[in-house]
View: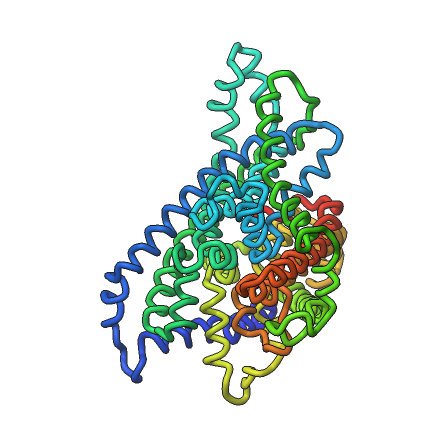
Length: 541
């Protein structure tokens, strides 16, 4: 039964991920029908390639370290302390992760450019905004992943160490930190992965001067038609992603085993005097999150030398600018329709995959198969969306899959991006169900599907709703693959924002800012609803 259920998502993965990525790589390594690896040393020895690889590793490492330093105190405050407004602060911290990457880039440009609130720092056009955007975007990964585990730790070990005379620092170093280490390593691995594969943020803030492997693949493909160079960098990125995903999977397994060893979920305690440093850091981090958001809203209201809603009114006018073929509100309609289709697709496939990877077969061979499936469906999270998007165009161009001009490509690509997040939301919930409940239902005469429904359906309602909202928000803001696939007469809002911000003129920038506010408002509203469902696994991977 498991084998048959796996056929549908495996077929989807094969046609819409393996085939496009394989097609892209084949164009690079088999340019004339035969294997040609001469481009590998040539590409890797280019000065620009060395510079891009160096910037990718250094910026991702720095972004990971800074995100951990900022996120750990926030995880402690939001998951171990009890105070009014905690749920609101959790929603604020999660918000950046679901914001479209293009919007995040526009936020920091508006904040640090001349006329912005921090324009006097002179950081516009440097690498600093990219690093700040990395921390802003990935803060939720650390807070939710580490905070979720911190919330479940048995407090008695810490209290025993304190009763024996250990200082708060000694308790943290000898008791808390070892228990949290798997979650911290897992979060750090994923933050590094997200930083090193960032696209929209780096493309918006870095231009041609600062680029990562992801943006370099885009430039080589679109601007220079250098498919061999793009293929070499795609393979390099693929190898790095596989290594990082293996590390993340191992640390996640250790984390789940650790959670099974602790006792009942510890209740959050009231705030005490020695919590003030952590509260102060949390306050600064929340200000850091809200500052670019506030700057974006304020600057979207600045029209010429005054203030008004002129940029928002222009969003509904198809003739407001010659840079676009449709109005921004029409583009919003396209985004919503594509996101709904992508969400339905991702939920159907994600639920099947989550059920499969949550099973723990007794045979070692089947356990390896299940583990392999889990890793395979995580790959789209780290593989270059640019590679996937361009692979769609060059492989799905002949019958029976001639989809180059079809609008279905956009929701399919967005579903591919949302699928791993749906699996990571549902699988931990399904793994938490005691398998003896299914066995008891089966012993009473229920069939396999009826037994699974009886044991697992009661705990799945909220996670399903949360995963639906999460998939919708992520699909709404997807930019990497959509930039390739969206037709000029059916653009999505992230594509429109990038087109506007790339054009000269204050009106174009103002419309981009207004569209960014609109898109951010929709995604934050969706995630606010998700946060109220209080599903701990959302946003933790």
